[in-house]
Image (cartoon, rainbow, N blue to C red; front, side):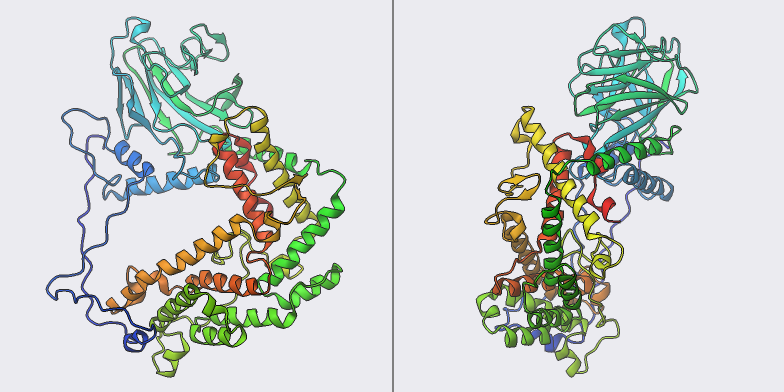
Length: 611
């Protein structure tokens, strides 16, 4: 298989539509004034095919690895990995599933995982085959100067927490001078791993470990043909240990630097090794080791001190829960919760019910009624927010194509494919615009089932303080602050043990910079959708068209969120619930920890504690 080039599937252009959607005439009258019509397309030419998907760093790496070893006479690899081979495509899917299960906190768009050896980052005596997973030696092998190594395509992301790969010795060759380990970018590849600074290796001929030095230390047994050697990097305490045939050999290295690459080195003819970066199940039970560390990190968060202010924490969490219930219109639950916790509901119950009524109309796709009701209850709201009104009209246009809007129903244009019954789903903690199928919802908390506000409130505070403490430690240790993402502004004012001391600009009052950015982003997202809205009319079956996702009921939620926030703003209430902002802040802290090389973030995901 390594010598075959993957075949590229022929692209097929979509068929030209025969008739527009049935409700096009009535829908076109919705927006005033109507935009000038585009020039009619030529009837003889079909619409252009959609652009090919962007090739990301991950897919590019997979594509290059699937082409086998590069040579001067070989043709360029196909742009998509494995071409049309269903078996290889299934293996790629299985690899993605396994890596996602092992390293759920890693964002591969930002920090790709190692998946193969790099055909560019190796010494010339190294040959690669079998999708760049097999390494063989092709040098003279007479002296140590003939040693050769190869690095993986990407460094190990800190967000892995625990990272593991295995190497099977296919043949020990003449002398078995093989090294398995890690190295930093730029380390000389004309050497075995461990011989130079920022290079670490376990060698098969003598069983010694080499830590940035040509002098090894006794570590483990030798290894030879048929053995499977594993290398585990603990990015929480910056240590590394090896395994042989599924058994741990103990700690080999400590105080490891960040951004190390998996590395393997060979020195004598006949040496051949195969790498497993997750393509197959590992011999060593690395998931059990990960569970141990997950338990340790969760216990560390649970024991994190919050001082003598537990009562203040409890009161603050109760207020956050109450504001969350009010924000999303859980009227009866908010009233019951306020009574049980001796609080006052910040918004009149009649106003909550009005917002709830409007939200139900939007989520049911009855946009015409939602706009009319909003104008009746809040006469100047849409006049002051022309962008919001336009976004609502665009959504109404989509619902008319869908056949769910009341104006279409009056004309008898109800579509059998439309979905007019859309239950009001509990909102996600992480984003009000998330679909019900994503993230963790507050339904069990809102209905008084499952989660205790005392326990969840304590944990929320501890997680937030633990994350903040971890970030603060970086600066105390002298880390360059430019490692932080400039686009993320931590506007939390002054906190003592994680509790806001002021409410003028902090996120707890619901009017922070993040709040405004979130609203602006939601509005932009809704406005951009109008560019695709008119495209629905170009298809006889818009539900199956490339832009048919706009007709999904889930797409109503961003519009509902923006409208709800605008109404709340008229009552001088937070446009976003503080509870959702706090959860988002904790998630942002975890993301910053990952980018800053703090591996413990891998085992402190917010979702794990909410289940």
